[in-house]
Image 1 (cartoon, rainbow, N blue to C red):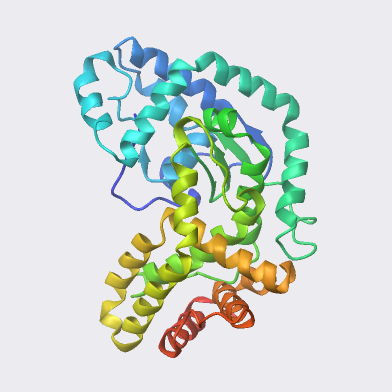
Image 2: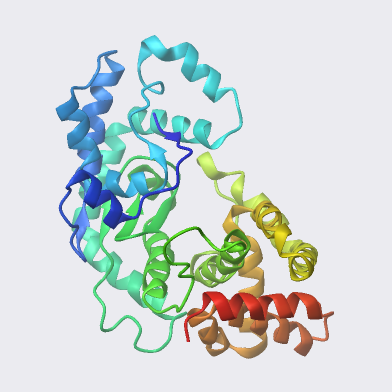
Length: 359
């Protein structure tokens, strides 16, 4: 039912301009995406087609407006219509993001009563959970970073085994929350949301993106996910059951290989230092090397910094992702480990910092 689209995701402001949708509130919780999903799902499983008004009721919910930011096409119907079983089975036979999304949506339909029970329970406990999550997120942010800001807006939608901090708030899937829990998840996403109000980059501006934006974005993700993972992902990451049983073993394996992976990143930085025309290819390679949007490798780096110098040494990196990388290099030097980055790589990092980080 969800298909990854090829187009770049719209910002919330752009989506609102195109659709005329009202601005979302700065704080609070919205569950309407859950209710509208099950209305549309009931029509599709009956092998019927929702009307334009029924689709619009779903797509205009805050949760599905956030889903649209993730470049997902909600109106692909093959997951639930019985008449589309052959097409659905073809998708499910492959190992792909689309197959994972389809499996999740089918499970959400099968577990409708349990998901709706979770929704009801969340409404009674959400305020306490939000307070706990803000406290957890604040541990890895500068002092005073959360006290003057409202809790991020939260919107629910059935879309996949995940949650995201997005432009405008936090997107959560209710089945994922049912199976994995709420507070650690929103603590992690709240950290992203608060960090976005503090950091001084990346702001490429209008027009064509800079030649090395993919490379810079991958390095930025090391900071973003690495620090946030200190909140909810201990090392080693314990095994879990269910749809994400595969994730912890792979996370732990990639985490352990961080020094070797960063050595490969060092080589990419050195190549781009010498020849800027290779930056696009280097950015694509960096994204491939830094699996799961840099989560395990960034977590390794952040944990090295904390265990060597303490949590306060993460704070410069909140404002400047290159400072996070330098703090990791300093931690490795303090530990007597080989330097993770060559002189050419460090020069390229300084160049990225000058162009992507506002003073």
